[in-house]
Image (tube, rainbow, N blue to C red; front, side, top):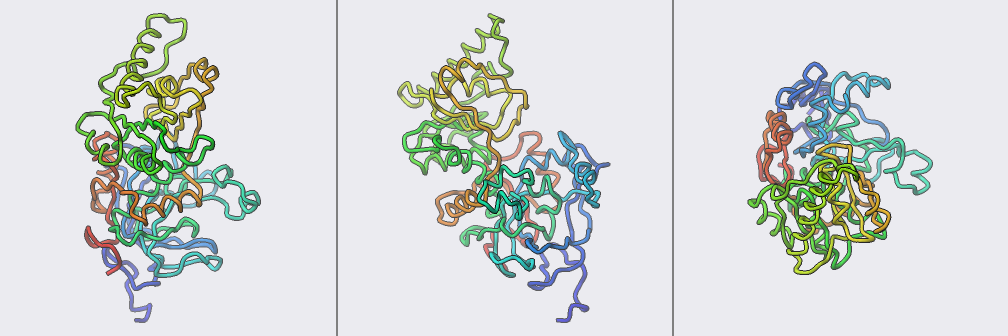
Length: 418
């Protein structure tokens, strides 16, 4: 078919011929005047399809995953991602979010050798200067000043018919998974993989007790499975008993309901006797609940953290001597307090961790390809429900596990291109 007889714009679910890139596409777009509640911040628009560079690939998006970073993008807080980019010279006055996706490669740059047009892929969200001399010399690209999260710190994410990625972000789509399940796991899974396997000597190992905050969420559901695969004993912290069975099915040896305790929040000043006593009593009760699950006085060697402000004091307290609290977010706030006596005298480690490098993302994807990790897909949304699912996440009313949005896939249940 001659290109001049093709449409310039294809409706959702109506894929253009393989390799043909229409000049325009549908996208769920955030603009600065719409900053606020996510349900109103996203709107479907027709925008130009992005051009790719020599090290990039253009992927036709079949489904997209949902993560909290684009709740922040919709709110315009704590960072105005559009303003941050226009300030450094980018011309687009809009943001297309989405940091997880499955899809089909439609075009590749001249330097690309790892994928070809027609490949079915999933994408991780790590981007960096691929020509950085330190990265080329073998340094971890996660420490490069050029590192960014695709679809949050960069534009042209997965909430659109086409997304622009660096080719190294692409990994093989697990053939047994639907497009929507394949879109849901990579950001949280690779993040959890680095947290548990990326900080020697505290790599998770057989017999370790691993305390997993938010065990029924996207990150927690991946962490429980990874810990179980390593022969560890994960314990999930959740918000209600109705989440216990979900976590146990994934491999948790037991669960704790955080609402059964009331000592959460900033650490009191050490000279404030009564508030400090209240915290210490609550933290000790929480630690004892861990021992009760295990049937022995054994504390977590690794605490898998992301709530931050409300929970870090307790996480550091219950972590075993010589253990590690590893944290990748601060969903309850960023101003976390630590009683340094427990940190230095018990020689504990407080380790920050942020997404993953190629090696770690590929290693996690291999586990999914081999059927060893369940993506834990909780709910699937239509493209025009992009704002709705982010609103649910903002209000903590989203389902257990992960969420996905159908983009190019005509319906749920498809495992390959039709």
